[in-house]
Length: 302
Image (tube, rainbow, N blue to C red; front, side):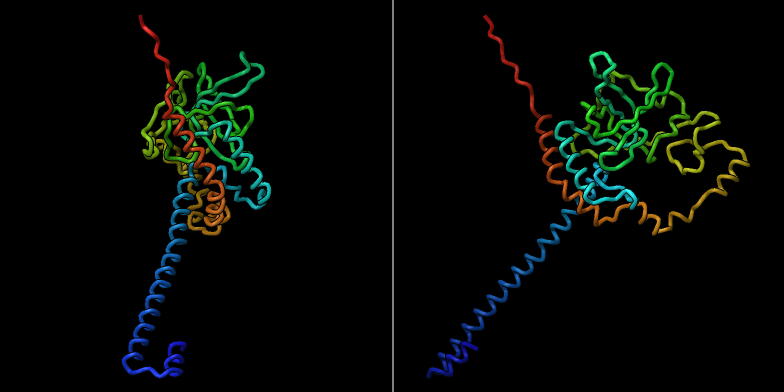
């Protein structure tokens, strides 16, 4: 409109008018293309951020499950959960909690006032990991002097001085409580066990071993839990009928039950994105410390 008003306000020739209109059209088209490119770039940026957040969330959801709150609404409190996450991050600065899963062999050193040296160390296989926030726990099991011993540790207990992952792997089931009814060979680990190192970036190894349980009686009714890490059980017909009667195969199709027992994915992404930066910095410092070598001053000869 500005160009047309200038043409009519002044006496231009036909050639000059054509040149003015062509110049105006080219200028407007160039500005439109620049705006369209900027808009397309601005539209691509949030998509990249969304994809990046998804990658971060999927990776950290399994490495740090205790940062996710309890799905039971009776134990939910956003302010308490945020304060607990802050305390957990502060605790991780002093004590490195490595990545581990159910089936990994851990060595935990903790303060014990009645032990010699006021320090005790326990080595065992992680048979269960549960809880959220500062209430997150792991259960270690080992057989000492033909006696099964289990110790429950709170991961963020101030008495814990060091946590080492001696054998990094996971099993087929979400818990290994059935090792209580299995032979001792599946739960026996030496206290001087040397750590097994994996190359950086390698996937988590899965141990597909099948455990042979002892004869009944058992501590739990294992045939009703759909376990993959045990061999086929030899049961009586009466026990098989009871297990079939107590089975609830329709629950795996109950979407509302899954929703009530889990945290929504959007909320998980918000929580994990909140703690990602600090956890990532801790991982970088750990890698740098591993690469550092102790300097030995050469001795003079002669």
